[in-house]
Image 1 (cartoon, rainbow, N blue to C red):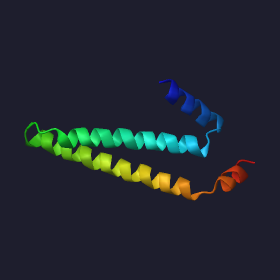
Image 2: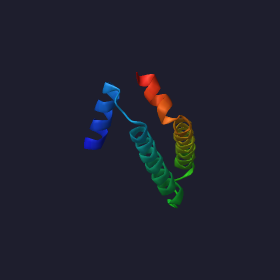
Image 3: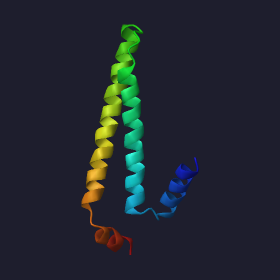
Length: 88
């Protein structure tokens, strides 16, 4: 939890670096990928209602993964000099 608290504090102070933001996004991607893999690999049959919930969860995770990857691509496209320029 120390890592998350540190990120929130820095975010509030507006002192996050580009690398810290990317690290946070990569962490979220990893968590979402692991969760989706766990759900997809679970072969238990819980019936049609829970199967529908499972598919909804997979779609939600897929959306978040695309969103986080899009943010990574966008942030990577911003030159470090442009970020520093906007802070001053």
